[in-house]
Image 1 (cartoon, rainbow, N blue to C red):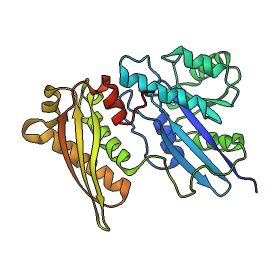
Image 2: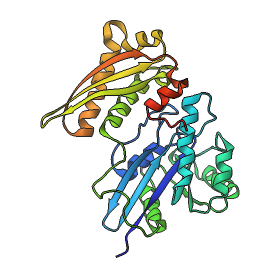
Image 3: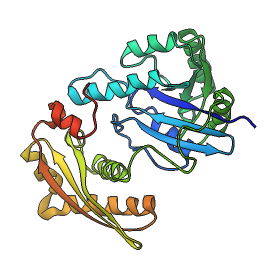
Image 4: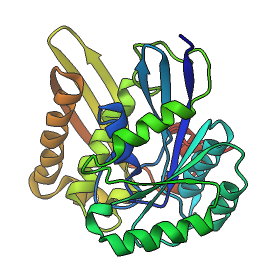
Length: 294
């Protein structure tokens, strides 16, 4: 039997359900999912293996007009998704009319590879609106296949997955068959902590934070983790810590619970907060945190 393999890259505006879809396909929570926009900062690969296929899913940051260096780097991850894709998934939600940066839509129109346009969150719509939206997007992207789905409710997700398998090119696997992602363990520690900050703090605080895991020590029974929460200003440090450390403790408890589920092992975690002034606009700091500045 011929083996199929390829990169299936997911793009779209912030908060349309890209991470929810990827996690549904992979069967593991690899990408942050919150109600806040711009939660994904990196390009994250999730690998789905079958006996005769390997599907490499790529979740990318939501498309925006960059306002500072970090966001510019995030959009470079999106641009890279066009370069190595065998199939592109363009995800929109009911009521959406365009990408935040229309240059990406023009690239989709010129794409020589299959484009699946997934019209997400149809559980929050009615039949007439769905038909109108389908017609609108058929006019915008005539070459794209349109599939209505609800990633959150798992509606039509299996059918889309099977269609992707049909479109995959014949190729040997790109990664070992037991590999789930391209990211190391510390990356997911950082992402889980960052997710808890997104959930527990408001306004600019979550977007001013970066996580760096300095220690990850694993033995048979327990994983010991020490992570630093980087903020841009002293005032943000005080907010993260909270009165008598209560806010930071709340984040640590919530992160530990999710980390224990993720690693299926007992976790001990220590969190510290440091000020790293204006790191989002500092090319050297961005490189340190894994954001490509080339």
